[in-house]
Amino acid sequence: MTPIWIAVIGASVTAFLNKYVGHSVPERWLNKPRFMRINTLVPIVLLSALVAVQSFADKKELVIDQRAAGVAVALVLLKYKAPFPIVVIGAAITSAAIYNWF
Image 1 (tube, helix red, strand yellow):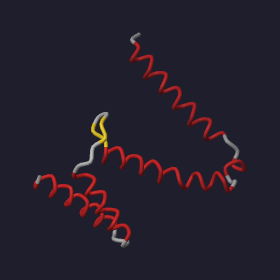
Image 2: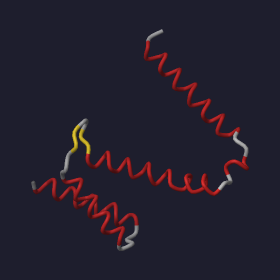
Image 3: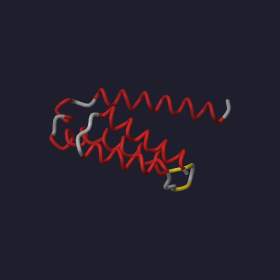
């Protein structure tokens, strides 16, 4: 058995055990206000990290390019409470325009 297969099987077992343990936790432990606050913030933090990595990283380098302008436009549109499709389209058009101009 190759090391890759050992890693795949190990990761699969770990994922299964994490899910099993998560379902086994008593509900009274999860209904505490601190856990509720953490659970509402986790998706926001994960999405923010994904946007940061996809916008400002190129392999192992930190880059500032047209994607930064797209993120800036998205932030401005979100500040003014624009609908989500408008935010995405505005950021994409800005990034594409700057990429094609320079």
